[in-house]
Image (cartoon, rainbow over all chains, first blue to last red; front, side, top):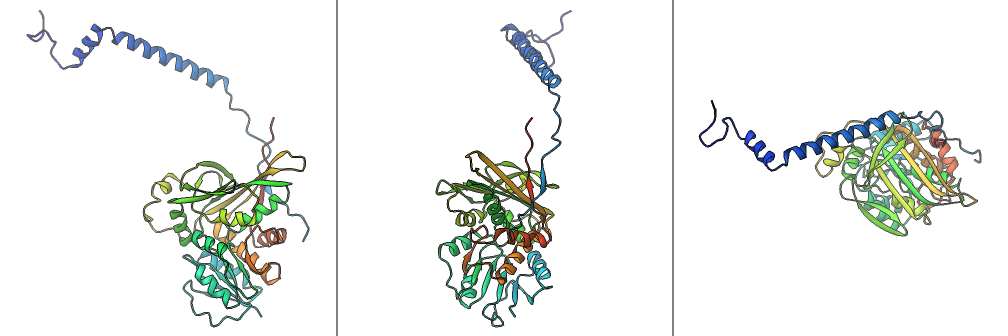
Length: 73
Length: 308
């Protein structure tokens, strides 16, 4: 038995209506596919950078040292 | 015997009194001290208080007194540099604190190590007493001076963020352009330098509230402050060189030590008469820096990080 409103909409809010609308126009799936693709590419790049970059070795020399004034007084 | 009169009972004034009182007669006065009839020609007056001082400097110099200022007021600095006070053969030391003052001495010392210099960049961190903290608060508002290719440029205060590395334990601090009189003083000492800038460290809250009155009373004394002086130029072979030096010290202690070095140098006849600015080529810079060190301020230089 069909459950729904008399005008053909399913009961319970407007989100399914929006989803039906975007699916009807072919926007939803394409958008979803692009978002997933972008997320996968971003994840792959971030992972690659994280694996490749070791952070290096902090400088072991240099920095500040006491200033030696010449003895010309 | 020459007496040193210190006007101002703040952090710098009391610390300067303590440094000098062991070796010479020193009188500590309130910052509002007006009755100067007790002074004798040849005495030294150190103005270690907040507020305007230009008129006071002129009046004291006209009485035959040596004057040393510790403040950081741009109108006073410009007024006294552009229209030097009449004096009776005495010295008027303009800016004998951490900056202006020690910054100029360090800049001159670094400049003497290079064949020529064309840029000086100052960064300061921290404050001394409450008066200094109020100046710091206001300095991030309004226009801040910078010197470039012979022209003064008014930058927006709180702009021009630069990460500056101070000696430990301060480390890296974000510094911004601010209303500081040091560029004017340095330009007088180094007239051939093309670029001069001065920045001070600040937090987001400092910058955001700079246009408001201070939201809470300042601390009795700031923590460990810092000074970083960067000089850029060339060596004898024409190679580009950068020399950096600075300090990490309580700002009040550094200011008092610099003022004490200037006062003792003045009494020893090392300073010329008329307007004296730290960094002047005529000054015995090494001697004055050694006096600053003897008063407990450790000067440090940045050795750089070796490239792989």
